Length: 302
Image 1 (cartoon, rainbow, N blue to C red):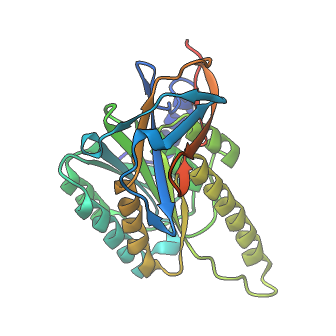
Image 2 (spheres, rainbow, N blue to C red; image 1 turned 135 degrees about the vertical axis):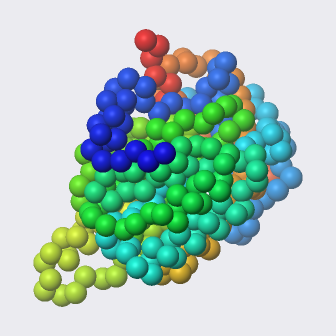
């Protein structure tokens, strides 16, 4: 399936007013992905008793979901604007195939690319070879609707409570044509249950005296700043690749990290269900750095 062009963008924006991305709350159960590291290495063998989770300042009773019960839903959101034509696109395809090759048969994947508009090539499916074939067929052209592309990824819902959605976004530069602004995108990310993981290609410094390049660099810097914030707010991370050849390793490091994450579950207690929920996750009787979603939103009932 390929959905492309202005019709896709319009349908996404119309959908945003009707069924925006929703943080996963099934039967009033919240699932929260948490990554714990110490000295740059993941910390394993923690128990539920090692996690203190506050929802809007109220301590919650949490439990661990076994990793064997969790299915990954990886949404590849790839920048295929004109700047990645040629060798960069071949390296990007190889990076995408590397991720698909690491997934288990139970996992799911989807493929979205963006240039002058978002393109949904394959919706979430466990038919991973079909995603690989679509990846081989993508081409590079046009401008860059980075924010619209990421929003398209946020709209793909998981197919069940066992599915943990992960967005793997690659971009090599600025946003120069999106309908959505970064503030709107951040709001939508808060309404999604996806962890946003970003790989950005390091930007070369603009050449002196070239005003157009300097302006593009400023837009790129702004976009990267927003991507760092969105990734961090959802419990993900912004990774910078020095060259296109490092993108494959960056993609695989995302999967390695997700394989060591903890999934905590809790029923929100002592707080209003609807609205913005500020989250705080700490360790108790254990040492390490914690990275997790900072807030989620439960929309008001219709």
